[in-house]
Amino acid sequence: MAAPEFKIPEYREFPTVPALVPGAMAHSKPYIANEKVQEGIGLPAKLADDWQVTHDKAIGKFGELLGKYRSLKVFMDSCVHCGSCTDKCHYFIGTGDPKNMPVARQDLMRSVYRRYFTLPGKLFPKLVGARDLTKDVLDEWFSYFWQCSECRRCSVFCPYGIDTAEVTMAARHILDSVGYGQKYSNEILAKVNKIGNNLGLPGPALEDTLLGLEEDVKEETGVDVRYPLDVKGAEVLLVTPSADFFAEPHIESLIGYGKVFHAAGISWTLSSYASEAGNFGLFNGDYNMMRKVAMRIREQALELGVKRIVVGECGHAWRVAYAFWNTLIGLGNNGNDPYSVELQKQLDPRYKEPSHICEFTWDLIQQGRLKFDKEANDSRIITFHDSCNVARGSRMGDYPGGQFEIPRNIIKAVANKFVDMPSATIRETTFCCGGGGGVLTDDLIELRVKGAFPRMEALQHVVENNGVNFMATICAICKAQFSKVLPYYGFNMRLVGGVHQLVSTAIRLGDEQ
Amino acid sequence: MASIEVNGKSYEIDEEGYLVDLSTWNEEVGAYLATTEGLTLTDQHWEVINFLREYYNEFQIAPAVRVLTKAIGKKLGPEKGNSQYLYELFPYGPAKQACKVAGLPKPTGCV
Image 1 (cartoon, helix red, strand yellow):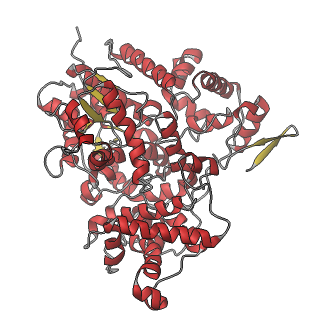
Image 2 (image 1 turned 90 degrees about the vertical axis):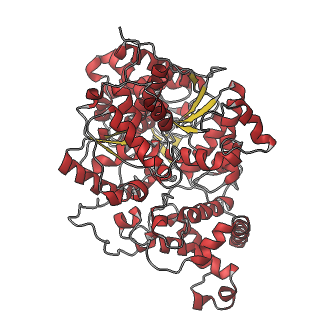
């Protein structure tokens, strides 16, 4: 695709609040999902010809969500426009568009809420900034709610604890329900439901790819490391984003997972039916869709009879696994309903279910079951990019902040040179890569490049001061996004990679002669 | 839906310029799609395109970048068996740009 022309933000000596550029991103909108895609996932094919029908449907859905999710109603009511969130959004910092201030973006929805669901808004709309839902308003939603990556950095700074991502999810859910879906995300949901992964990678292709990996690793190390598929009775089922089978640098981490299992002597398997950890249902705020995608994993866990479920390097997958799998598929949090019990009976209670691959590897390191040649990573000066859904949507280990420490601990265990980026840009205040939450698509490349700006500034800092040449991350979206946008900021696209890519470089496979 | 005209025949393409009906692809269409990407096709490009199509016929999906680089390396020598070589041929990314020219669907997901 020929890249569209736009201005790339310039590095600032002192990062301050950008000057406002009203309407700077009003033109940004993703492709609309076509009728086939929409119908494929059980959504209305397109907007109704009669606006009134769409209007009523949208307001009806809005009311339904307000009734179902008390949180949404609280978030609609409780904002006092204090302004804490305004300059915390990477898309606002990168574009200067005032509607990308989180409070303003949410107000696109809140103004409609006031009109239809509050007494003052019903009686005196003008006085309280309430407005009718018109086609223009819906178009504005489609534009600006696809300029949010649901990263929740702004929520960290909100004194009322408003989960801004949940507002975006609700807006997208309403858009979907009136036939105004986004092509990229919905096409992916259609594929995962049909084929088992976001990529549309059929079983035989997956098998061929994994056999190729076994050859490569054998050639490189002389060791027979296996990448097993659909093995009944394996101890661990690994679910990982399908990008790990396909893209660079993702596949390097997949190679790393296999080496960890090999070195620890733990049997494992991938599944061709549940060959996707990612769950785009989350991005659209659609619980039923999310459940449908997650069910594939439950079915395969039962079918293959595994004792443990481990999730690979994928940010939002881990959030879904950590925070939603318990109610979605009865895994985790010791549910005692019959549905949960069925799976819990089979799984090994000595381990945390589900586990993140970083928890899995770090446990083995602590037990002394993995050995490394740290010098093998000496050509790398490494920093770590916290992915938003891991940093702010979940946890690792058994203590607060484990999700920040464990990946860093692994890096320090396998490499000698590590340095963090400036503190305001990492851990719970990490900046999004700019491509999360369903915007990782070529039609939004301008948004992605501009949204990456704060992260690129922080990276530039450690590149200049510390000579950093490798940014590790544990999310497939982050990896793909950075590979694409790094060159816009003068960096090599290969500067990004996975934590298990570093593990892969340094690990001793145990059977060297 | 949009369409392109090649040698007096019309071919349907999607919003992003990918061919809708893969079976209608031929080399002239490939060459035309390349021009929409600002590419002038050389023999080296065709090596990649032909491999993509062969792989797709067998597996109904484009090959992983690693599978592609390995195949190219075997055929053209190890110095060309890397993604840098592919990026020289297809600067916007071998997976997406080469797929478009070869008439394959766009790889989706976190890639």
